[in-house]
Amino acid sequence: MRFDRTLRLPCDILFGRPSDTPSSPNEYLNNLEARLESVYVFARERIKLASERMKTRYDSGATARHFKEGDQVWMYNPKRRRGLSPKLQ
Image (cartoon, rainbow, N blue to C red; front, side):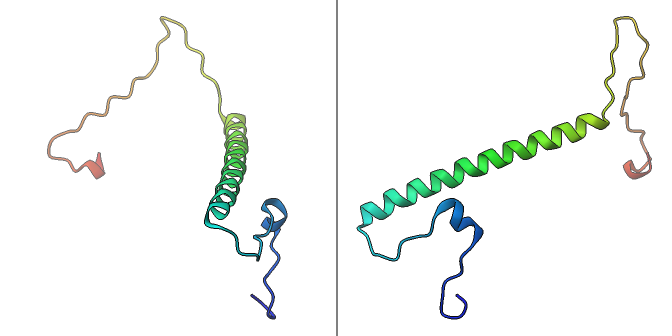
C-alpha cells in the first residue's frame, strides 16, 4: 500500500484484481482454483517460449557432426591413475 491505496500492478491486467467483497468459502475456493489454473497455464507458456529461445540460441552456435561407419574418431577414456590427485589428472 502506498498513499492509503493498494498498488495497481501489471499482473492485475492479466489476472484481474481480487474483489474486496467477502464471499463464501466455496466461492473463494472456486475463484482461487481458477486464478491458480490461469497462472499455471501462463507460466507453462512462458517456460515453453523461453526454452525454445534457448534452444535456437544454442543451436545457432553448435556445429553438427556427421560420422559414418568406419570413420576414425577420438574416444574419451577417463581412467584414474593411482597416486595422483584427481584434481591434477
